[in-house]
Length: 311
Image (tube, rainbow, N blue to C red; front, side, top):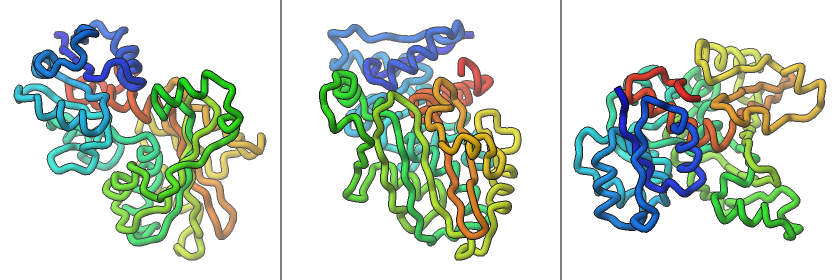
């Protein structure tokens, strides 16, 4: 039995990738809007309400407007914007977040897709906060390096056009310390102090890695305890791979491969450490598990399907 799906914002990077995932799915009927009616509120409302699942691949304000157009109680909205990630009544679309999250995703008609940086950070910190290894009020910092596809169409065009020397080197941004992912990074880890977060965009298309330094002695813990917290939390998770402590393959090369999860829905977690310090790292495809792949995984769960179908 097929399900109907509509992507509002089908021409954006996330929307296009969702269409690629769904194109191979005989169990999904994709509803499409005529190009000349993409901004026609009545036509969008018709398609939103005709769908079993509607993805909102829109800017925040437009996503809120689209959500208000839905009157059919059967329509499940999966919002890829930042608009609803900490909003009451919306379930955070990260199945691996905690026990019971999958049941909540199956039951909810309002799902907020996680941000790419936030997904990696939350998967690193939530198990450590829950295990008591990192206090909720602990002062943390994090950095993230990501491919330029995370910046959307305009940034992709700028990088692929070439000719701008500034784009050939890594570019830190969000220097006002108010990145839009920070609220969800706090809300879904249990942290009560905002982390100092510095994202960096690099001259490569996709791939993302978040790094969080930990002073083990100050926290009263060990690298082995951190590693065990990850292994315990993510045992049996098909899309989360906990790599060996002080991963020998990475250390042998001497360099970390940010793009090694590209074209997958996988997240790799690492603990690199000495006796007193550690860096925990997560990597993912910012267009896969960091965006469109996560949205399709949430859709599969909501529809009662194998969550890895098509991924």
